[in-house]
Length: 69
Image (tube, rainbow, N blue to C red; front, side, top):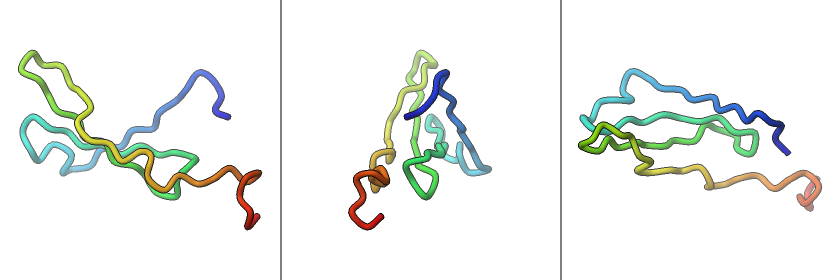
């Protein structure tokens, strides 16, 4: 279980803003072996909204539910 307050580690790279109006970042999670990508899209009013996410793919089972552990 995560502890509160929740902390997000967000990483960008030199190509995160290659496409105008879009911004791609990665998030690290204890439930995944590699960082997960999310892409934001900017609306005409300047607000950024979630556009694409790959957060839920291949999430590991908790050790207590993994039959191989």
